[in-house]
Length: 439
Ligand SMILES: Nc1ncnc2c1ncn2[C@@H]1O[C@H](COP(=O)(O)OP(=O)(O)OP(=O)(O)O)[C@@H](O)[C@H]1O
Ligand SMILES: [Mg+2]
Image 1 (cartoon, rainbow, N blue to C red):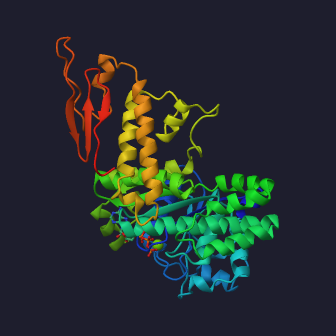
Image 2: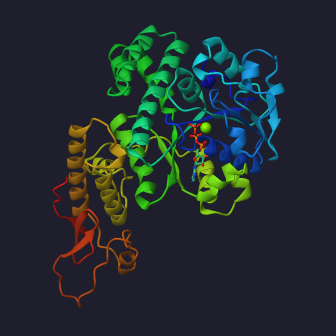
Image 3: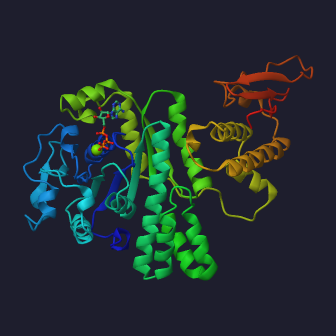
């Protein structure tokens, strides 16, 4: 069953929180998202989709409810509302995962479709699924069929690697369901073929393959797939580098994996949160004023009102437009934006970039670096002279010291060190790159 195929009117939105790896903070983010939405006036039902090791109630500071989702799945009750419990937060309810361990792998197809059907009938504005770890079909199905999906990862190479793997697998699963909905067997066959090489393959190639035989079906698929825009949260960040990872992963996913993903925000590590879990307190309700709470709310806001999908405006292609697009900028972006984007992408594309994790894309990386260099060179030639005011607001002011005035004399180029970069600024304040061996 495809949730997206059901009429939106009168039914709750189904949002899913997943992430492949265990212990990244999925339940914490799902609980916080639920609390925030409820505080904003929406009726929310949190569903602990981790049937193997449910613990959402603990994160919400509750005792285990006497009835759980497993009771409904095993048909002990006809109405799912029997297993919905109040959380103590107004407008926020919980369906707990299981009283006795019921492995999520054991959820049969008919149980899964029944579950999705009844979730869509719940009296709520948002049904929020907290999924378990791993990439079992049930987790992937619930994630890929949800109206909105959020990935929660840690700023660690293993977590980044798992995230891309999860994203590709969920994308394939979404294609598979679209194939079934459209009754198009070739799509289903191609998905099954690609499934075995999900780690290395590019799932988007399936759409290209289909386009070669049936461009109409491929266009329909592409438009459906464009609506699959998972959001990404980096949890437990402890440095600026950790914070920047999300932005880089968004770009890598768009360009190299060709599955659009949006960075929703980075959540700082907070030891108080660990204490809250130990003492069964809901963090967001108990500590609403910490930086971590602020970021949890920012993530909830960003996820609730997603940014538009693909970037770049409409219009005919020109070399200049292509240069802006290579730097991920809108046409006509300011000089500062060009330099900032250039430095950001260079960082993203360094051979040791954490956002590249274990992706096998060295040739593509080098080609992209060359394209970015070329784009930056061509746009730098056309840069306008910045005014003194603008110069004082130089965007890299944290890293780059603005050029000093030298009584009208043309100044020689000065070298400014940015960690990992070599940039010179000329007398007009325009930035020029010196070759860096790493690139
Ligand atoms: N931002 C944070 N700062 C500090 N500790 C955190 C943070 N986020 C999560 N934790 C800690 O990580 C633990 C695991 O979080 P959580 O249960 O939400 O992970 P999970 O991804 O749902 O795990 P599982 O895959 O087992 O379901 C929490 O109990 C908490 O102690
Ligand atoms: Mg969990």
